Length: 451
Ligand code: NDP
Image (cartoon, rainbow, N blue to C red; front, side, top):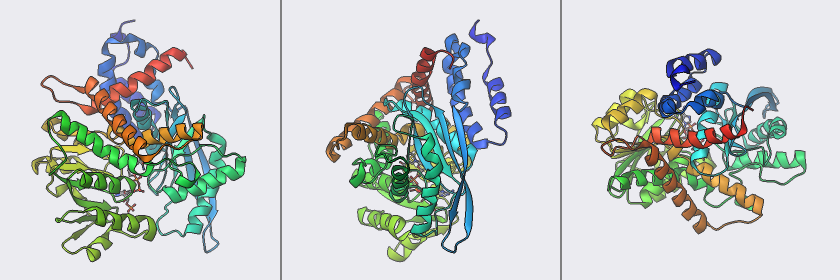
C-alpha cells in the first residue's frame, strides 16, 4: 500500500480526540508531535503500516489507585494516584512523579508521551512514563507529607522496579518526598535497589542531579545561541517558577554572565532590575525548600524589587526567556509581548509551558525556541546516569558528571539541528526534537513486530 492510502493528520487527530474525551493536555501534546511526524513519514510507508504513531500515542498502561492518609487532625483524606507507563521500547519506563492539585490523568498522559521522545533524545536507554497524585503538599506538615508518600508508595511499589519503571521527582516532589518514598519501597520489598532517581547523596543519589534540569536548559540555550554566533554573557533573562528548575536555571545564567530579572510562583512574580545574583538565588532556594515560603517575601528582603500579584513575567523586557514553572504558562499574547520587546531566545525548563499558538508566534518571528522535550532533558539524562551508577554500585564525581551533562546537551542540540535545520539556516527545534526522538523509538518498535 502507498503512503497516500493511509490516514492523514486530520483523521489521525480525530481518532485521538474520540478515544481521549476531555483530555485536552494530552490531545495538545499529541497534536504538536503528530504535525511533524506526519510530514516526516510522508515517504515512509513502514511506519504507517505498523501504526507506530498510533501505538506511541496509546500508553502501554495507565494505573490509577486510591491513596488514603491521615492528616494531623486525624481526618481521613482520600486522593487519587496514577502511574502512566507510555512506552518501553528502548528501556525501562522513566519519568517523574508530580504532586499538585492540578494533576489529572490527561496531564500525566501528556507528560508520559512527551517523556518518551525526550528520553529517546538523550541517547540513553530509557522509555517514557510519568506519575503523580492530586495531592497539594503546600501547607502540609512533614508528618503529613511522609504519611502521604508512604501510602502512595504502598500501591506504586508493585508497578515499578529498577528494570521495569524508575520514577523521579517533578513539581511538588523533591528530595524530601523521594526520601520518604524510597524508605517505604525499601521497607515493603526488603530490597535496596535503584528504583527511584533524585535520591539523597547519602543513599545512592547522583552528584549534579538537582542542578541538571535547570543547568541543562541553559546549556541548551547556550548551544542555540552559539549556533548563531551569540552567547548568554551580557544578556538579561526572564525566568518563571522558583522551584528546582527555575533556581538552577537562574544560577547557571548568572554564572555565564547573564542577568536574571524575574522569578515567580503560582501567586505572582517578582521583578528585580538589579539582577537576581547568586546570594539572592541561595536565599530563594532556602525560602522554597526549607521555609516553604512564597516568592512575594523576596521584596521584603531585597529593596528595589517589586511583586506583581496574580501576574506572569512575560511582559518584562528581556533578551532571553526561560519558562520553568508549569504547562501552558505562556500564551499567544505573552509570546507576542516577548518578541516585540526584543527577546532573542526561549528555552523551556518546564514541560509544554508554551501553548501551540505561542509556539507559532516564536516560529513566525524566527527567534530561537528550544522546546521542553529537548531543552529540559538534562534532568532525566542525569537520572539515567544515576541508574548506571546504582547498577555499578559506584559514584562518579561532580566534575565528571558536569562534563557528561554538557556533552549530553550538546548532543541533543546536534540531533535537533540534524532534523530541524530549514532552508536559510533557521532551526526548527520542535521538528528536530520530535523527529529525532520518534525515529529511535519507532525503529525499535518495528524490530519487535506487533506487540
Ligand atoms: P518545583 O515543585 O520545584 O517548582 C515548581 C514551580 O512552579 C514553583 O515555583 C511553583 O509555584 C510553580 N508552579 C507550579 N504550578 C504552577 C501554576 N499552575 N502556575 C504558576 N506557577 C506554578 O518543580 P520543578 O522545578 O521540578 O518543575 C518545574 C517544571 O519543570 C515542571 O513543568 C516539570 O515538569 C519540569 N521538569 C522538571 C524536572 C526536574 O528534574 N525537576 C525535569 C524536567 C522537567 P508554587 O510554589 O506556587 O506551586
